Length: 262
Image 1 (spheres, rainbow, N blue to C red):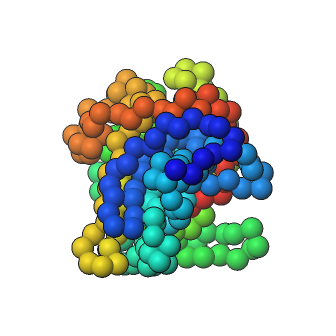
Image 2 (image 1 turned 90 degrees about the vertical axis):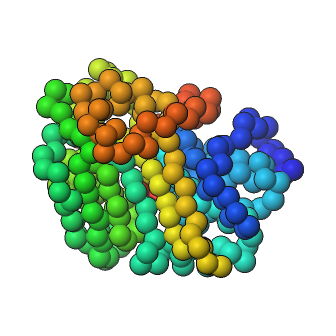
């Protein structure tokens, strides 16, 4: 096994699916995908998975620190490139759950085609398809299924914001007053975003796929909201047994995210 010099917890991450040269884990909230210059000594999924499987691993995509859900790693360096290319294929599919501000109406899918502006001033085309799973007026919130068709920086968070329904708990693109109300009333202390499922073409044929249950903090909150039964009927995967939070993740402060794709 590869030891962690900081001596952090050896608690394993949940493996959702695995095959020859790859695995998909359930990333808890507040866990970095990998360390960065601002958080050189923070706990991270990369180091945990490396310890868990006893070899070097390679993240194929990223999730924000406060986003949970499906996270794909290559365990064979020769597959890192092909898996990354597969994630960009036309038939690749990622599905996010976004808990957003406001009561979204309408049952049909809504397509958002709006370019994403990067820090250098350039824009990149971005497309997402959204579907309402459930909504309520008291409290005013909705659960959306979001299928990004491109992989731009903060794409899901920006596209729902552009519709007037920012993700709850989003300090960058959301409403600080509303976020504070949800924190004080419901204990919502992290981003309401979860990568529910991932499915891509396997380099050798077939599909690589996984579905990630909610984590226990999300499940406890959602089950007390008026839209829960409606959302569960439309998305039965919400009813899977929730996953436990890591002790470190549960107790860690909410540092700024690491600029990932969600």
